[in-house]
Image (cartoon, rainbow, N blue to C red; front, side, top):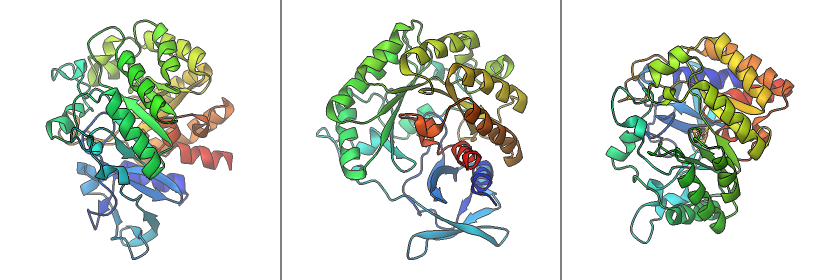
Length: 366
Ligand code: SF4
């Protein structure tokens, strides 16, 4: 099976781990996709669901690692190859002078990405009717796995250590949406500025479109190298149903903001997360991607993962065939539009671990 399809299958079905302790700590709760574990398949490090309900019944099994750290992947007893797990980062063993463990401030995603949620609360998360139905931003906070507000000084300290001890290559700064018109751009700017003063690390900021486009230049000047503004769903019906609070910002505003942001950050340095499997048809997702690519925006299409404890925990993830029918033509569209994951300076699109898209891109190029 080609690597892109194997990754797509593993991400859609999840896996059962014969040794749940294999690899370093998995992501549980938090903003965005979660309940994964990082694993490396044919040189590509990807996040594969391990704590979701479908993963517990997955036909894919990963055996205990052998003495050299490799684990066999099998389906129905038939071996499909081997994977390995990235090692536990060394910066996880440190704490700040006020005794906050570094892993509560930022975590390692995939193999070489430092990720933080600067503000672990969100105006969209206040009530069951307004919350984005897939999001678990409050769960990791309630479980004591993170702190609510990471200060610029804390972020700078952890980023420096993660570069020095673990060789991280770029940083993702996301945020819950605070009250106020900048929608998080201000705290991203002050955080990026502090990190850049401490260490030379490319940074992606992620927020909703701010009310005033001036924030794009402010974030860029502060040290944000690339920007993510995440659509998640692409049609009005699905947006209203799945993310009623965030859907109050209309799609038109997102597209205006994309255009203004590309003018500041550059062609291919603005991206958006699209969660496939929430109800949008393949045609609708591909049509939106085409529009985004024409603007110079990288559409990072990711299979929806049903996170335990969220209103969508029982919603099925998309079938591997559904993802394949999106990712294969999308890789060709990206190529034709002159966009590529590897050209993004920082962020989810460059990391690519939550989707098989970059592997499809690699195979399309080959
Ligand atoms: S794609 Fe984004 S959310 Fe997924 S592992 Fe990479 S940095 Fe983290």
